[in-house]
Image 1: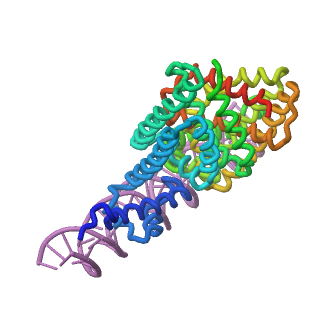
Image 2 (image 1 turned 60 degrees about the vertical axis):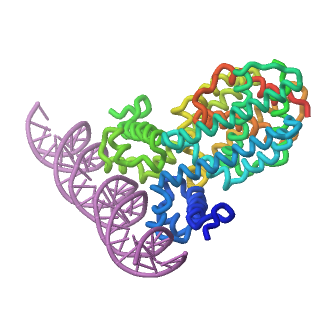
Image 3 (image 1 turned 30 degrees about the vertical axis):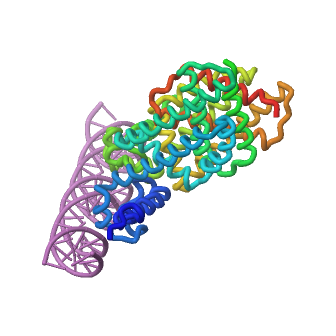
Length: 202
Length: 202
DNA sequence: CATTCTAGATCGAACGCTCATTCTATGTTA
DNA sequence: TAACATAGAATGAGCGTTCGATCTAGAATG
C-alpha cells in the first residue's frame, strides 16, 4: 500500500503545504517578519506540527531558497539544450523579463539576497547555485560567440555572464522601485542590449 | 553661544550618531533583525534615549532610506551638470561600479528594496526618489542622444533609463551572489554595453 | 561671583507582548 | 496495539517602547 514514487507520500504533501504557505508569508512579511504562527495558520495546521517536518525556521528558509534556485537552474539548462542557442536566448528574454517584472516572484527573490549577505547557510546555498548557473551560461555564450567567429578568454566570458545576469536581476529591483515600467519597450531594448553584448567585437 | 549653522547642534550630532550605528546594525542583521538594544549599544547610549530623537524604529529606517537616496540624487545631478555629459557618464561608470561592488554599501541598499515591497511608508520614499532620479537621467540621456542626431520618444527614453539603472542595481546583487567578480573586466564590458545603449539606432 | 533654578539630556528598569520552540496529551491509521 | 500524525497550551527569551528618576549645563538672581 505504499505508492512509493507514483504518488507523493503524506509527509511530502505536508512539507509542500508548509513550503507554499511559508513562501506566501515570506513574500508578504519577509523572512524575519513572518512568524511560525502565521505560516502554520496559512498552511492549515498547528504551529507545533511544523516542527515535525522542519528542524526550525531557518530550515524552512533554506528549503525555499534551494527550491527557488533549482527552478532557475532548470531554465538555464533548457536554454542551453536548444539547437540555435543565440535565438533561444533572445527569444527567452521576453519570458525572463515577464518573470522579473512579476511583483510576487521578484519580491521573494529579492528577499533572498540580503538574507544571503548575513546568513552564512543561505549564502552557501545561493553562491553554489549561482556558480552552477554561471558555468552553464558561460558555456552557452562561448558556443554562441564561437559560432560567430569570436574567441574570448575565460575572464571576458565570465564578465559577459555577469553583465547578462546583472541586467535581469536589476530588473527585479526596478519592478519594486518603479511599478509603472512599460513592459513592451523594455523587452525590445533588453533584446538589443543583449544582442550587442553577444555580438560585440572587442 | 549658539553656533547656529557653523557647527551642528548637539541634537544633530546625536541623531547622526544613531543613524550611523543603525546603518551598521541594519547591514549586519537586517532591518528587522537588528534590535534597538543593539543600536543603542553601538551608538553608545541607552535604549530609552533613542526615543528622544526618533519616534520609533520605523522612523530610523525611513531616515536611513531617505539619506541613502539623497546621496544618489546628488550623484545624478552632478553627472548632469558636466559639459560633455556622454563622456561624464561613461567616465563615472567605473566609480559607480566600485560603489556597487562594495559589500557594505550593496548590503544596505539591497536591504531597502524588499522592505519597500511591503512597508508602504518606505515604498513611498523609495518610489518618489526613484522618480526624481529617472527624470534626471532621462533628460541627460535625451541630451546625449540629441547631440548625436537621434530623436527618441519619451517611452523609449524611459526604457533606456530602466535598462541603464537595472544594470547597476543588478550589479549589487551580483556582488552578493558572486563575491569573486573580476572588477576590471566587468568595468570594460559595462562601458561598452552602456555605450551601445546610448549610440543605438532603432 | 556665588547660588539657585530650570529645562533638557540621559539612564536603565519595567511592561506588555510576541516570538520560536518544546512538550504532553489526544486522535488516527494499519 | 503500535506507530505515527496532530493539536495546542506552556515556556522562556527577547523585542519595542514607556516612564520616572537622576544628572548637567547654563541662565537667572541676588
